[in-house]
Length: 450
Image 1 (cartoon, rainbow, N blue to C red):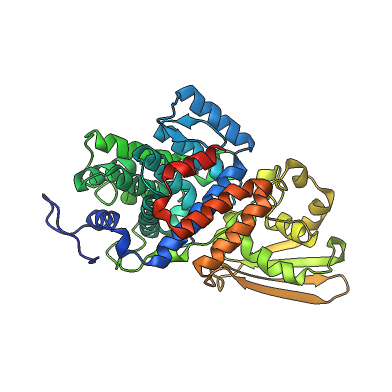
Image 2 (cartoon, one colour):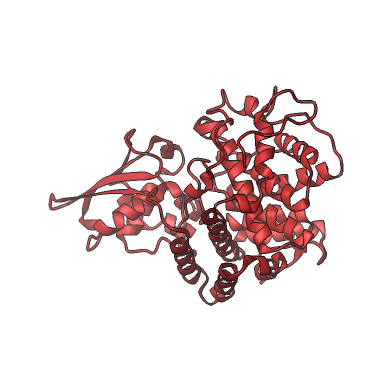
């Protein structure tokens, strides 16, 4: 695909929105096979997170919300059972699949891609009756769109308090759902501009049920914008990059121009979680585990954790009050690693864990420091023992892993998290690897209903 885009009627120059629409039209054959393989990894990972999250307290509340709105088998499927209109299914499934905070992360985008985009894409794919191949291609292009807008908004947008999973993610959900709905260029332009007036989500919700709801909001806003644009609802010519549009109102200045090469897909930098907590903690966990062998909490004099400064405002809760808040605490996760607890176990993060006397006492020994030499995927630290010896670690989450190996790790994650319920997911993974075009999206809907 050329980096240049045809100039739409009424426009005198190629704008960032033109380029976004050009990206939204990219054919699967123009995408690298590895990128499509990685999109299938994300689908499998999203399904694991959603099926596991379907028994969380927030899941029951969201299904009750859907029941009040009504739904028939002509609608879209819900994690844990039932049907709902596409827009409602998107908000329910987005929320449920992010309930465990165990889903993938893209650090360039500064957010979680699958939980905001796949719920919108699957809801539309079920309604349209397309294949899993079409679903994964729509997700891939939607994810790439969200990443590009996330980069324009930049870290300042996130640091100000916006949750990019929900804000930039909503535009990705719109692109994915719009492709599957068959929107033409004019309708896609309208849908993206309508999404700009709906996209929302705040980090102040972290540690509450409002945090996973942000992912559901992204997905729902995408479906809603597509449906309204399909009905001919008019919108601003450019609600994203134009005057008083989303970028101008939500970022001081664009962090980088959108007019960069679209030839290489940044989605290839997507990362996956193998610990059920904030991704900002994972470099510490991975680095700490090898040096923690044989060390008990009472053996530790001090633990110094060094991390990128952005994480201090996200996952450095000093005294978490609930299991949800534990997922955002360096001190607690460090203590859990040293206690030999399995940080990937979905049922571990309880309110009782936040009050555990051993972890409470150990937290006072943990010092978390900002280190400008570390990227947001790197971590380093030093464990000082009571006998005066020290052990140090460094870890970089950015080390590349081939999609086939990632799919194996996600399959292992499915067995760990789901137990016997992993079998249908693993069977689907095999079918996707063999021929995704032969797998109807409705089969995926049947899987999430259970």
